[in-house]
Image (cartoon, rainbow, N blue to C red; front, top):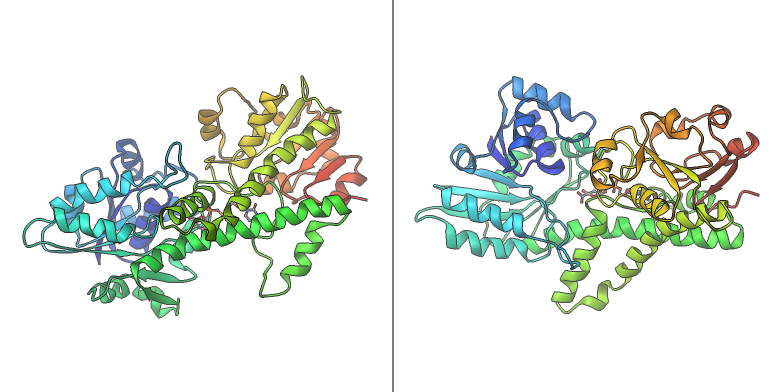
Length: 440
Ligand code: UGA
């Protein structure tokens, strides 16, 4: 099938390449000329394992191309995926829908014939209906535009696999919508694999996405709250998570206690969900999410406090190495990164902070130019009085405590992601502190 994907960020670029990989003919459109130039040249403007290979292959085989011209998308296809950003509004918890509305306002007047727009962006409930009204208003005489919502559940760093083999495909259609057969045709190969296909109304599909992210965020904050209790009572949160995780009603995934969640999705999605609930007069129903957010942000402060404790209360003049800048491993995304937040707070408290990340250095420098960025892991560790493992990269998990001990000035480490073996590190002479773990 022919289709366009509007917006070529993490979501859109991955979706465009994966749709081509499934055999479709795809044009990706974005207003950002530099991004389109890179993608057209087979270069992914961000770090996403596996994506460069499928981008290159599908460009070469002619199933995929990119443009900054909406007119090309309008003329090329009758199915359009909408994958532009919905960031948090400045000065408010609500989602900023400017890019979503602008896309409809630009694309729809250019359309001729019958078109289907499948929204992928994470939006407040009710957005699809609002966009339908806008599209109906702007569609040229004789053109029909159907807006449906097809939320995306891909995780950064697993984007390709999550798009090609999703857990489920959800599509929200309005009453009497003729779009279901088209959606089934787009995802035919996945449906043939038996991937669950759920058809709902549009508002349910919109809510599915924010509910899923809010549930994941709640799970992480739940275990981080329990981690605080573990510290207060001398228990071990990792053993506890293993034990409760064996109950398959609970499950072990997303019970990793530590520095908490960040990135471009979970934090802003729970806030936008609360804001929308308020608009709908249902704010009490989601007031628990405020606590989820507070617990999450507190983990960053707790790590900074642990660092202060290491030096008897003051960080002034102490050399601290922060391992990690990305919001999670295998990503170069530093949006709302807990690691970078901790590094910034330490620096503002007077510490001499050195940061190292295998992929996120360039992005981190843009956000926090005043921090010192090391050229390598060894360079970062050299002369440190305290090491903080803040992003769970394999390279950091694999560190040998004996070897690292030879490079640092003082053997102090905070494992803010609970990925090191504390006994091994302690036996190698380290003073190790981990989140929610009592190392007796
Ligand atoms: C999240 C969802 O997992 C995706 O399903 C969704 O499609 C996506 O948002 C989105 O809305 O676009 P992502 O932001 O890529 O995906 O990251 P996650 O893998 O969910 O991790 C989020 C954060 O939680 C990271 O900072 C991670 O370090 C943290 N985390 C995760 C924990 O602190 N503990 C855990 O046990 C798991």
